[in-house]
Image (cartoon, helix red, strand yellow):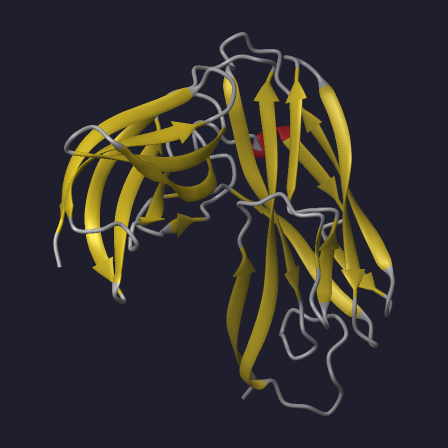
Length: 272
């Protein structure tokens, strides 16, 4: 009996990378995000470079999904073109399967055709998945001879975000969902969940400014930078461990660049 169980390791993409490499197998050169500001009716093209880092021929398949995420850490890779803001149906790409010689780089070319629809505003996106096909996989076109396909196969999969911004259109807006003060591994953490309730992709840096009861400025504490598509949410964690016990007022700021700065005020009491 030939049976293979597949474990998929997904390389998620919130950051724009210069290159994503691994010691062996396949990798993506040039980044895991392709973003373009386009006009209605515009057609633009691009390419994804896939490198085989191993000493043997490598095989990969390329396919589409939609993509959303939530502050609780969940990610959803649904059927392409189903989400309201999916651009999967605008995208054509080729080839869908590749065999890459050792040490070589092959190209997946794509064409994005933006509809000439005046109702389109803001950001639209989807994913192109590049998945390694091991020789032990039933999908392989170059199987290992004389080996029965039984066991566990580990598969590396990269998600390349395909992002289209319709000009400079779309409302930019954030909502603070909930803020909690937590203790995690002897650390005092300010946990902040925010949601993009606008129409455009936001690149948000979050920090907290603390003031004591007399109004004296204590300091600024950074929570990092994250990307939010419309309708998605993320969780920030701000380390306040070094702040002495006491009662504080906090101004929590989410800076999305330019004039797009959002804030909320909170009161906290730090105890032992």
